[in-house]
Length: 185
View (cartoon, rainbow, N blue to C red):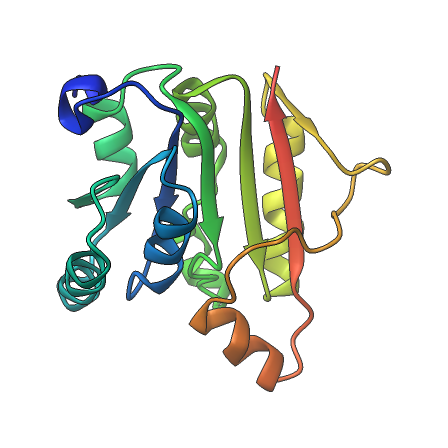
């Protein structure tokens, strides 16, 4: 397990983005919120390199990156209750039915992620793939220890967040973006 106070050299709210792509969203957030520490998990090496270049150009000291499988890193490196918020913006929808088992948001992963959130910590998810958004909503609704922040148990109005490349692409294609916000009880 990482000692995040040592990793960052301070104690601050910790926010995690899983699958940060080219890093533009997480570096923008880290620049805008210097009072918070940001962790990013990504598997794509070119995206990690691009994010490192953006972070260096911005002089960020509140951002740390990890490469690898999100479930493995959460389980082995992120302490329980360490996160104030986690973001999963536009996770791969694996649209073919035979590939649905590869989707990140599954019951086991959701339970693991919830265990890493502090009480009161938030989970923010966005998807422009309607069937996956429905699956995510169903999985998170059934996950013990989480409460949907949408009054009707559905989706929330788009929260203020950085426009990601995948969101822009979905908008160009006419896809409706679905936002979910849950809080750990």
